[in-house]
Length: 92
Image (cartoon, rainbow, N blue to C red; front, side, top):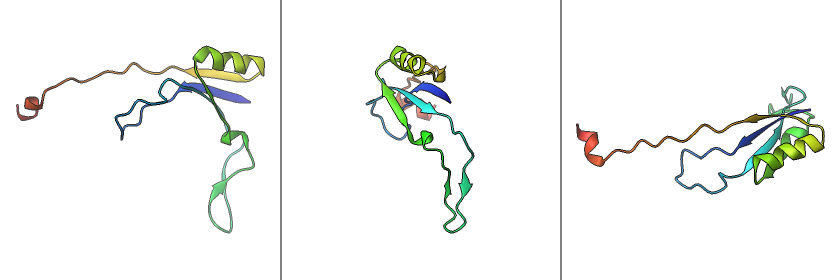
C-alpha cells in the first residue's frame, strides 16, 4: 500500500504556526470513490484513507514506513519566502 510523507502546510487563512513541525503519513486510496445511490454522498470501502499518522520528524516517519513495509514517498516542504514591504508601498 503506497503512502506519502509530508509536512503539514500553513493555513493561508490564519497567521498561527502551530503544528507546522509535524510530519504526516497518509495512505493512498486503494479504490475509487463512488456516489451512494440513495444520498449521493461519495464514499468507498477503503478505510486506510481515514488513517493519518503524525510524527515529530521525517526520520521517524520513514523509519515507521520501513519497519512496516510501507512504500512511502517523501514530499519536501518548499522554503517559505516572506515578501517584506511597508504600508507606504501600497501607494506607489
